[in-house]
Image 1 (tube, one colour):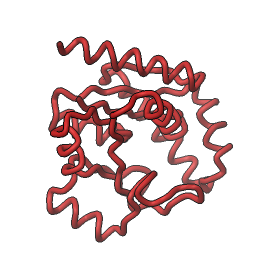
Image 2 (tube, helix red, strand yellow):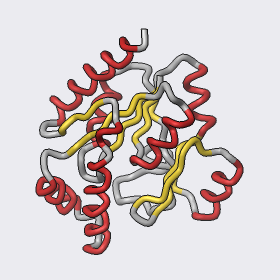
Image 3 (cartoon, helix red, strand yellow):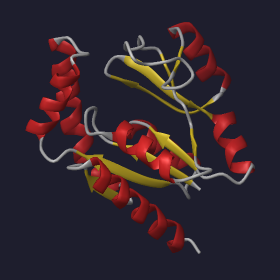
Image 4 (tube, helix red, strand yellow):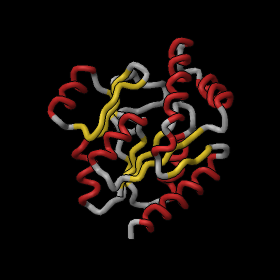
Length: 185
């Protein structure tokens, strides 16, 4: 099964996903491709595959991407072959992607489950983003504006988790994934 995790930048998606990966043996995380520069602690092939605009557009044009979107001025996408291979091998696949990409995957894979991670408030979201210290002020403003748009789309998801506490959110995610899987059987 495919589980798609979306939410605004700073909602804690990555941290919840990492907690999930530690607790669910065998689930595969589809590492996204991006044209944005790596942040200081990010490693190519682990956090993202960092590629040039040209490389990304060639992948897109060949149909290599299951989904792709421009987010915060950068391109992001997921390898179709990786997801299909993991599914063919019987693994559940987790995609941590934006709402645009989630809609594309849902159209391509109607059985995919969509899970939205929401911050407790916009004030807390802004505090989390500022604490990262990875964005210039104009990029911060863009991320906050995008967050409002993304949160408005949460009703399109199969489940919503308000991320107040990481451990609690991971537990809620595990319970939600279990319920969603059982609903298909």
